[in-house]
Image (cartoon, rainbow, N blue to C red; front, side):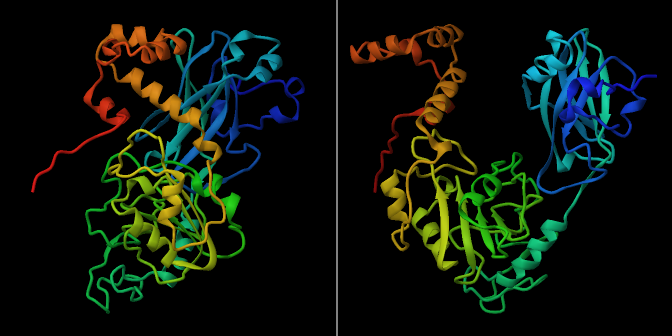
Length: 406
């Protein structure tokens, strides 16, 4: 029986040399593939973070319709498919190799001892082409960060130090709940995945923090509103409003559970719009920051409503600087991932998805921007594009109002 991954290394060059993937040789079929992440040259892989990322390519002469990971706890479709012209070249120009690239993430909660990768060929038949038994999940980084947490953990009310397994503040009597190894100052309700979807899967720790902080310096940093990021660091404390596998402490940004002047740097990425008291949150970030240390805060401006647990206040650039009036502003502006085209794309996609009338949706999608703007300039009625769900109307509204009474 020929192993499914067998290919000619001479035709692929050094980047395509494929040592055997354990278990794959037991699979029959015409599939050819390569797993490029995790690195197949390493005998074992320890994965930190909220999910295991898997990237590679898989080819079948009749094409590949679908790719998915399967564990004993569920099936996870590939989150992305992309073109690989290098694979086409290596397969002697076979056109079905063009869309052979794939990327799939397996949540830690769905992981088991032998996750498998499967591909459906053009005839509708499924083939298992890899068994990922070289990957081990590791909690070492979490444990190291948790040890550092107890050097700085304090009661959010009176700022008295809180120790490991302590259930009540010695200073004011405030209760401390424990979700496994994670202290919670929001009660026992902050249980794992209690809200269903993760707060956020952004990679601020990897993509943002390294631009501003030297995480290898041995300092201590705070990711306030960390979500459930794909990467963790032993020197970064992750704070959230509920406990995820990477969360070090559960608490509210309006009363941070840390001593004064604690952190060498703070990350607040896409959090400000979700807090009820942005001025109080900004003051708390400054309070727990060491003198001379820096924070980086990214906030929404023209982003539509995206609520978890709710969406309260967007900020202009001047408004964001005003929130941090107690700090020296070193730099301010628009980050590469905050450019206007992202807002335009977000609004257009949401608008198209929000139609309740299919004819209006099709007409809107086929209307040129020039014609659309012309209708608006001539003050022509736009009823032809107003059949939207209530959710989309609130998400994209130009404004909102409230009528009150005393």
